[in-house]
Length: 355
Image (tube, rainbow, N blue to C red; front, side, top):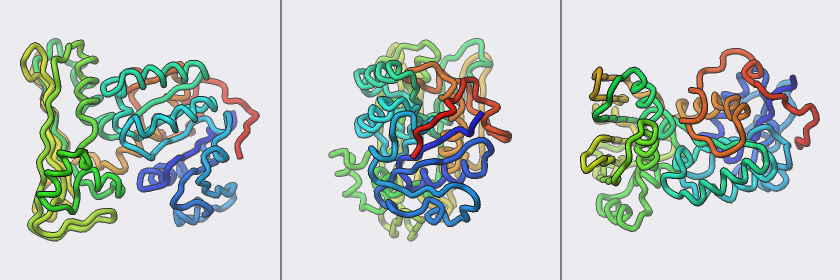
């Protein structure tokens, strides 16, 4: 079997992380990269690594030239957080009979925000015999899939609390803007009101995924957002917050079932939390038979966790039946330590139209 051929659309922090991981794996190769900011450059030069005997990959901003029908087996799409913004790109790829894995947070469970767009993507994917998945560290794992996996050991579940205290530093500039990093308290409050500061994108998706996975019918979801102020200067690769300004966002989400909060989530995220003695971690508490309390200290790192979930899902989405998939639909991703082709259950076409 030939190598699995991968395209990457978006070459910021996540795209670069995925590329570096793929280049360490066996039985898989990157054949195309689409990015505006680094167009015309060698992928290997951008990554700062030797190409060796591998074929050259020149980054191209023209997606119509980069992704032609069946030119790759899967595209890793790392350009947006919202389904509506990623939708046209996804449809373009599906119509070229290419599987898609998206880092967009809303794509982890897109039917929760826009059932019509989710239905359309499912239809187009099935028409073209390919599949699409949205995943990452969160949503996609810590505050939803991990919770559901733990619930599999329970006879009954009466309520769920989940918390992720994480460092935003590995994420790119767009995430810094969404979280309000570096703005004043007043600018943060105004940004939340006019929705220019989104905070964490994913509570609606995670809460709906958990409820659907358990068979609970949600009444409503409520969310709160408040700024995390810093008393010291903080600077990461992609963001900066001076003392007295916002270092991140503390967000909470509540899922109501029969008038009661049965799913509760808390997600304070900020750059360089250790600057003020804050320790990161992931926490899940399930009340039921039996009670379960899980603590992971420090947090599962958001950067490597996200691109690892994406890359480790490649064989799973290639194997999946055509259509829109979520983490409820595919096997749990696991680290790929051998040849990735050993996990591929379908025949890969020998002839390729790769550029």
